[in-house]
Image 1 (tube, rainbow, N blue to C red):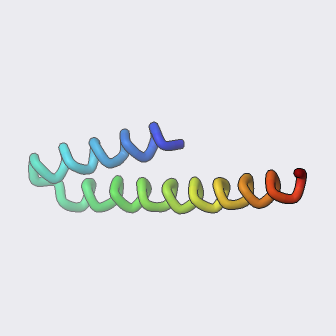
Image 2 (image 1 turned 135 degrees about the vertical axis):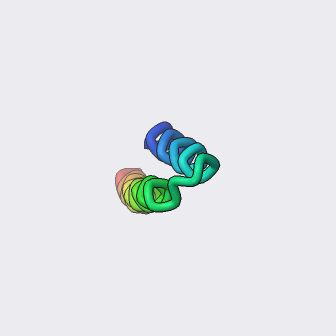
Image 3 (image 1 turned 180 degrees about the horizontal axis):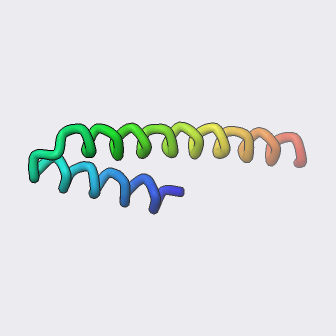
Length: 53
């Protein structure tokens, strides 16, 4: 998931450099959403490990 976040952020940066503001904003929003999903899954994983032990 981290790889997807980095890919979308790089695409957003390249699009912003070339002046495609709307496209850059879209890719940045997608990267944010994936990052939040990653955080939620990380917390769920950590809590489940805590209760297993």
